[in-house]
Image 1 (tube, rainbow, N blue to C red):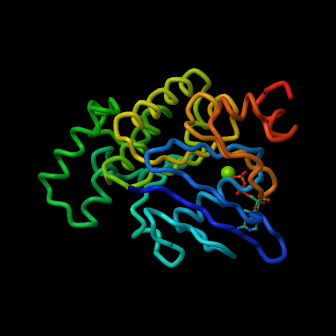
Image 2: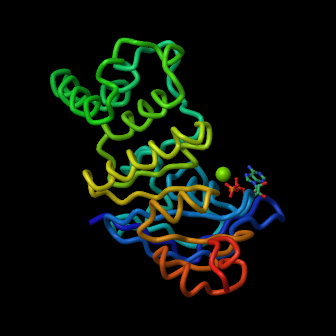
Length: 238
Ligand code: ADP
Ligand code: MG
């Protein structure tokens, strides 16, 4: 069971405190959305969970273990960013297989896995293309595919759809939700978009200026916002 807990997590850059003691308990299999205005600390929190950023205080617990000193590569997570970060000189197939070859997965197993994942994400016709010959939506599917083939314990998404146009964003929301239903993993998804949060989340964490304002199911936040900020942000009439 791979839940994720944050215990009094803090982050400061010099004198600037950007995360001011956040506690969160994300259960195994939950789709948890971090939402809040630009600069409130969403990406910083995600980077601390992933191991790309050191904590200034507190603990991050994944699957029951404190991972503060566990390197990013050993945490069993996969992260999908807003910029697709695909390798431009590699084909889609090579982009998908790269991480697996590095950890010594047998070739036949890699080919099989890529076949399954490519089908699931409808990129099976694109495997021999290079990123420059793909649309934005196709690139983002490849980026998600690259995370899926690694079979991570937890998926982390940082505003993965914000470079896509509105219509495609709606499609991809549905795709990611259905991926979550199919895989059942814990997923943490950062966005500044309230609609995305309300439609995709099992649980929403509303952040403001490095603090957690409220954590709950979308309807709970809508019906019982903790304060005016949450009400305003979620769009409910408190
Ligand atoms: P969000 O993802 O919610 O937009 P961030 O986590 O990127 O917010 O940033 C939170 C705050 O931390 C911002 O005020 C940002 O300027 C600051 N910050 C982020 N990274 C650094 C850094 N490497 N050095 C100094 N300040 C940073
Ligand atoms: Mg961010």
